[in-house]
Image (cartoon, rainbow, N blue to C red; front, side, top):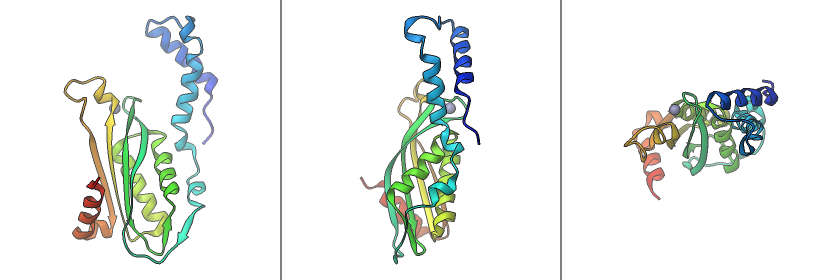
Length: 189
Ligand SMILES: [Zn+2]
């Protein structure tokens, strides 16, 4: 996918400011269209990454069949309904099938799927599928706890609500005990 034309986006943002009743030429706003264009290009660039580039490094061969848990991976994304941020933490657990990922790679997978217009549910599934299919894990569980600015800034009584989503595949789906082990390990602080 080609990179977005930031000059074109900046012109649209300038027009947006006018429509919102602002003066795009006042001092504080002069550079805003450019900044917004660059920020949006960055915040959506995960959709333009070739996922093979993320997979193609740092797979370690390791003989273990115990559960690997990586907790509290920071997550920042944009909800596709409002183009407003949602943010929180992602927890990933998997049972390796001969190979394990480096922790930084799991974080890069999360970033790749988060940096685009997203839904939390789909983000959770995409991460779990990638871990399952690309590592060849025996099972995987992904849980995301996130707060959505589209709810927090607009609604009332929703300021403190956290949305929790999870996706389990393989043995995490088939075996209740494995799933429960994952959930209890993720919950302990
Ligand atoms: Zn939203």
